[in-house]
Image (cartoon, rainbow, N blue to C red; front, side, top):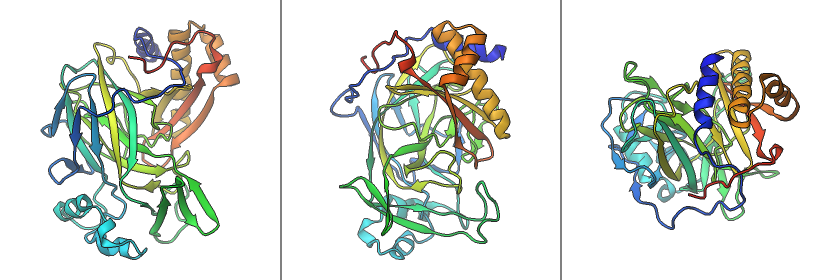
Length: 358
């Protein structure tokens, strides 16, 4: 708890913006473009030793192509043809990256990166603003199987290819069911502590990673502690839509292009126990653990500490407000390390600064 208080006291010193209605992107065109290719994509891990594929300045924006692992089989064209997807709608990136991968079966998330952010050093904090998200293809994949929250509910994995109506912004789940699209990046991460070197892409952690937090929509901001020079940022596991919990084990996996802005905050990440996020309306305070009860406990502790550090509440009032006005939800319960987040409405507070004005 003391370490948590240290983090959020540190975070309180940062001029993090609060709510406003105008989320106009900061500039008409990004500073950089990063394509997804066999050379810029890493499968199944987040590495501190991989050479950067792009170098940027703090404050710059990058338009990043990502590819979904959904349908990235030995023959993606044949896979998607099962649902009537023509060959010319299968991304060449997917075909090339699948061909460059080795081994059999699912080989892990396809992550674009790392991006080196000049000036970022261990102990700093990296602010990642989600400026834009664009669908690259009009379809996605959900593959419920024998795992997820209810192991054994299904006896085998089902490959469900779902077409998107991008004009109406819905997923065509069935003739009678349409799901409004809400795209977000399932994985945004910095490289882990160099003493670890590399982690698998499945479990999230203090470095971010496979958080599957469906609140990280366009107009949101994620804050990550930095462990390596340049931060070494990765993103992927792009989703067209996902419910809280991701209970079947995956979302509607669909390739996206993300435009992100990177801002370095010097010396503000050393005591962070977990990533945290915000948007124009809410703060999102996270707790991660292999046990869901412990993840909830950590999220509540972090939320109380956040309210103390940012809003000047006593521990008792922070705990009380967390019970009365903060909703705690499961971001994902299927990735080994589980994530609970508390939603703190900014409307609770009379004093609110502008959001995304710099």
